[in-house]
Image (cartoon, rainbow, N blue to C red):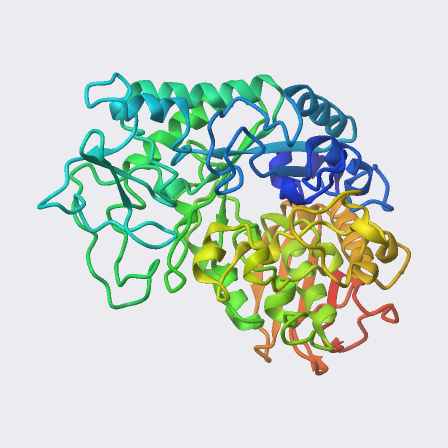
Amino acid sequence: MSAAETNAAPWWKTAVYYQIYVRSFADSNGDGVGDLQGIIGKLDYLNDGTPNSLGVDCLWLTPFYESPNVDFGYDITNHCSVHPEHGSLADFDRLVAEAHRRGIRVIVDYVVTATSDEHPWFAESRASRDNPKRDWYIWRDGWNGKPPNNWIAVSGGRGWGLDPATGQYFYHPFFECQPSLNWRQPDLRRAMLDVMRFWLDRRADGFRIDLLNHLVVDEQMRDNPRSWKGWYAGRFQQPLCTRDQPESHEVVAAMRTLLDEYGEKMMVGETSSFPWEPSQAHTFVNSRELNLAFNMEFFVYRFQAQKFREVVDRYERVAAADGWPAWTLSNHDIPRHFGRYGGARIIYGERADAVARARVCAAMLLTLRGAPFLYYGEELGMTNRWLPRRWMKDPIGKKSWPLFSRDCWRTPMLWTPGPGAGFTTGDPWLPLDPDADRLNAQTAGARPDSLLNFYRRLIWLRKELPALQIGAYEPVAAADPAVFAFRRRTANQSLFVALNFTDRAIPVAGAAGGNVRFSSEPWRTDAGARLTLAPYETVILEE
């Protein structure tokens, strides 16, 4: 094996990414809200250059911009700012400098589909029908006293808001407080590209692009067709006119052209899709458009090796030659996978094998070909906290409780035992996990068998093995569908990876011997003549 193999690869291919929900990560001033200074204080936990740290290579920061916080930063009033509760531009500059000093990159959320209805652009746009910024947003006349068409918002309900002063409707892809930007308008496009320049000039390493495939809508404003295949945002409707428009690729190509002016930067896109349809993420990933796009199909499956293998194999078949996958199991919009696969601790109680399942999930993300994205706290086993309605902040939760509230998986990070869990000295903006004294990073870090130390071991091993970072993916047929087995190969290294998704021992064919580079079972020192996986075991053999 050769370090030159990985050194020649762009950093965004070999990196392990870590999503920080800024409000919930670390509060430095005691106001109960996470901030940029708080993140700076935790950088050594994330990567201090030694295996005593988590070892992540790149941080994705959720929006920290000026905002009325109806949707907590995704409703922006100034794209080139820092909300005072999160700090200042000077704090951002220091965060990037301190992260870079530790070899950590920083990417920021680029919210491209909408702004807040309090944004100065929208204030001008709604001032009159002939305002120069009118067509920076999507305005249309109604029809017989009704909205222009049948479009609905991703969050549910009509996708059109009425402005009584001008008598027209504006389109909003999410909440009504988030009017949609019109990327067909050249001046708006230039203004939004200038936002990218602003953060690149401040040494950001790239962007996570929000709701990328909702960027452009049908120019003719045709109705979305009815669909009986599934339920979408509260209606039987297929969003063919509000998603995946061909013109989106042209816009993304313009973003990439700008990005490439700055050298080794990257973009990863959120490309949402129906749960029942294959992801279209691969269509945006190539040398002209995105570096990475999230494949979110893992979100909809149960803890089953065969389902995960089908998703991976399907992506590998359709991806472009220069495509690179991005895998994740949880984020700020999707319930934490520890709770999905291990039981929601507060409501149902935790499965006895919850941590073992979490280890298998971690091993899958960190050994597949592609970029693994971790969600803050998953390395501790943080789960989805049930909250009474009176404590909820999320506008979705207020509408749909108790079925769905994103607050449940956005609770504060757990750092130490005791009041505030090391997150804050004040009252946290969301309640802490009541199991904080057991789950916190300080306690977990001191236990060799903790989930946190499992993540550390695997991430630091990944840095040593070029095949795990840049190797090709080769599926290996397993006699038992409960095993997900594959090889990762470079010209100089071949690794065999086997993941047991059950609580029973399973013999595995296809392993050609070799050294055990990793096992979730501390007793395993060799593969033996015939490899038999222990319950929920992960094994990596160097052949």
